[in-house]
Image (cartoon, rainbow, N blue to C red; front, top):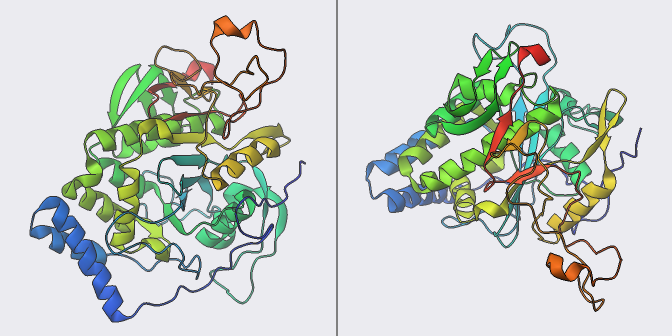
Length: 435
């Protein structure tokens, strides 16, 4: 098994984990001011008097959140974009509890797994966003995690377990602690979504258009999609995000690239229709979130969500990058490729945007049918005078010395797959005959 040591890239002391405890309570005046400010923000956007009522309706339905930390360093302003870098853990649970029929037996005794684990990083300068997907079968070190049912007896640390077991060990807290140890980044916000949450939120945005290059057939999720464009919402959107057997080579890694196809289209759809400034759609999304998601305490206030949304809406599509955490095959799963991971998180810690080679995962293809995106980052070449690497044209490459060029800041190795939100990709379907 490869080295599963914790990582450290940020200004935190190497190997240090954030202490997770109870957030400071705010007085009633500050709390009221936050709600009023949130209502005011929506009123300013919509110009409708009913907006304030809508905000109060959402606030009244927010469930108690999970405490992730006590520093308060990243507290958002009452109105306006959030300050500094932002890290949000997005966790997809396979629990059937409270999900009704159609997702398996809710009373069946099965382990709760986080089969989707993502980290959204907004750069400090608010010019780029990176969404990192962590393969569910990746072996990682799990730190000691609080037991929500027995706080006085935390779970012991484990040297090598699959990352999708962390939600079952210690809930959202344990997944966040594990991601912090793995990435060296402090995570101030987190959300766990179950099946019905995906259904509700995809419906709230009016569906997501996705391209399918070859037919998808999956009896495990009851999904069948012919080649072409499909507007997916509700249950069909959930089936698409869950399908593994119906795309690529049937692996979880193919599912990740298929999800990136969906998410990149979602970002384009949201920005093209100005969803983040549309009070009706924002209200629908907020209501879907509070009704169907478990949020960290830091995300339960409406003004926090508005502050993060204001940053996202201004980031260019080619600066929104979806990337799969780099892994290699080991017995029973996959393990981190530390060199590539180190490059990625060191770049993010320095506020450098991630640059991909253009290679897509096995679950996605470019619209022209190729395995590369339409917008790969240019590869640097050495200059003929031995100076700094440049993107030289082919006519001058023959004169360049035969030396290995230095990679550009944030440039990831060719084997790291992903795409930007600007890349229009299609799902590489897989029929039953090939399963």
